[in-house]
Image (cartoon, rainbow, N blue to C red):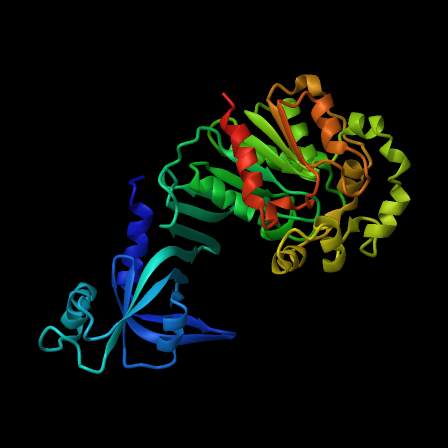
Length: 431
């Protein structure tokens, strides 16, 4: 890919449209104004007589501009800084000429009518999205990043057989190994959204799988596996099969990053498949770790069934309030972030849940040749046992970084960047 391909597509879309909504803020009031615009590259020009948007901009120059077209569905969100150019501004004529306003509107002379002002919006970040064949794709351009970062990245939702996956990648992929994120029980690719964007800007090609019948994979189907919610027949071996299928679609051996139940899926995959590395994020314990910590005394099948019952024997569920207690015990994420995450939780197969939470998954650590990195809480929030430490010890982890105060879903915490940096430090060291 050429360096400017994605940005060129964004600029072309902006240039070929004229209607937008500029959003401004003042105190507790947001104002969205539909206006006619002109563009020069990533800079938006709006001619205005006046109105409430002008005093808003004078008090708060941070604005967004939304452009939208349909059939097919396209749109751009432009985040930038606005300035107001009066007719007596020293660079007024120069900016008007850059905008193309006089040429397109065919006004005589070198100035617009005396009563018009120019709102100039210089873009810092643009999210350009479109939907083709039912699949959503985005191009994200961020001009605020420091040197060495990929400014243009891509975000695609892929439907592959019985699974769906979120695919983030930069304009220029500079890292050899693809990354695959594997989510915890009840969850989906949404819990890795910040990590994926971060790694894409740092040159990594990553996929976040939605295991069969989880989150948007509920809309994927194949002949023998129709779309829909989990049935209760799904087990960890099925989820390993999903991971294997996704990995088989890409070039090169992946680095698998598993969270919670997804950590067990990652280890089981690495037991029989070649991988460049395994990263465990608050992973659930394999059988040997479960038994060494005597977790069977604390976790009983009957207790689990009662706590997570969805009204039948085959599936479990978690409502929003319970989800917040389990996933964000220390409430280290924004309130809105916790709400959004926990309203997207789906049902989980009782079979997979019992297997992963009652230490039924045996892993032959001697068959895992890839380096392992363990990160998460020093003390597991649900059992009080030091699961992460014990996994690192028993499985000979190459590195282990644990934190005294951390939520289970620390990927969505306010300080998620430090955790992403910790992971990248390890995976960058893999030869």
